[in-house]
Amino acid sequence: MAVVNKKVTSMKAAQNALMTFLAKRAELDRLKAEHGISELENELVEIKKRVTDWAAENDVDRIDLGDAGHATLIRGVYGGHYVGTAEDVTGDEGRVVTPLRTIIYRKYKNDSDKAKRMWFAVTKRLPDPESIDRMVKSGQLTVDEISPSYVEKEKAPYLRLF
Image (cartoon, rainbow, N blue to C red; front, side):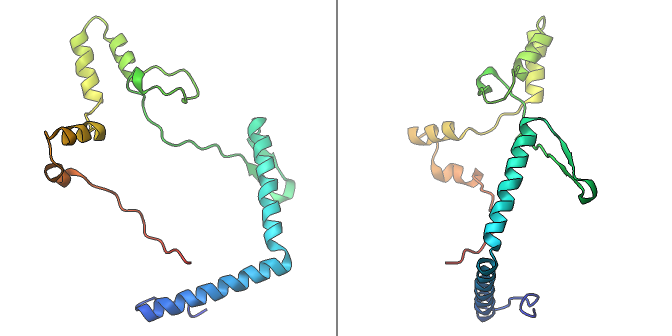
């Protein structure tokens, strides 16, 4: 276990740690195969998937298991955003959506200037990559001119073993 808690401080230490990792992974794979653990894990995944599918299809949020506890169906969402304009409606929303612009202009139907001010107050202009590409292709902007404004987020590094 000493290797597990030892900090890697050199190329040699990294190589030694990875060789230990590979040996331990091989031993784990051997033990899983020897004892049928991989098949058992696959069975567990399949059972849980079938129960999850049934619970979701039947709107069952909780399954009591007596002294063993209970299971709770977790329904997650992601990517929440406001639909700004009718052009932003994709049809994949899962319900009827009224664009925010429509809501604002209906609210201020008798005062289009106020509607416009409200629309600009709740939205912001963002650089459009396609429009930028068109301007570069047409020669109105150059890559050198715009490159200082281009940023990328770096993903967390990970190690791939081959």
